[in-house]
Image (cartoon, rainbow, N blue to C red):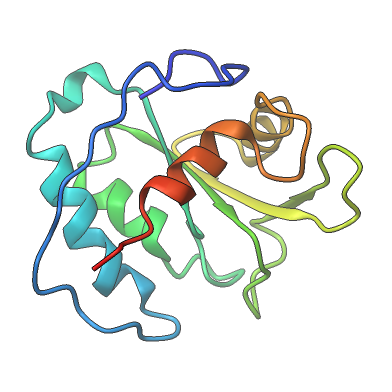
Length: 149
């Protein structure tokens, strides 16, 4: 949980272990990750959340086929903005994704959004706290969600 995109550290880290996670399926990442996010959100008052940043894509192609972020947005009945930040491009998504470079990195991050303007989402992610390619909050999230099981 964070308050401002410029925050270097989260206000709070909420985690949950979810059993029975589906195997990875290219182009259907949401089948694996969405149940985990939904399970975590059941423990929170979603009315207090205005925006969720995910590690992944909102859209998978220029026709608007949903990725994880789009499916999450629909699950939340289009009430919470979702910003997707991916480290690698997804073949077929160009118009609905913005590439941004942070710090001194020449390797871009790929930003997509639903419920808000994608250019605004890209500006917010570019301005996130941290000096490196990955914003500090996303790096902490990435490290925290790696399983030791």
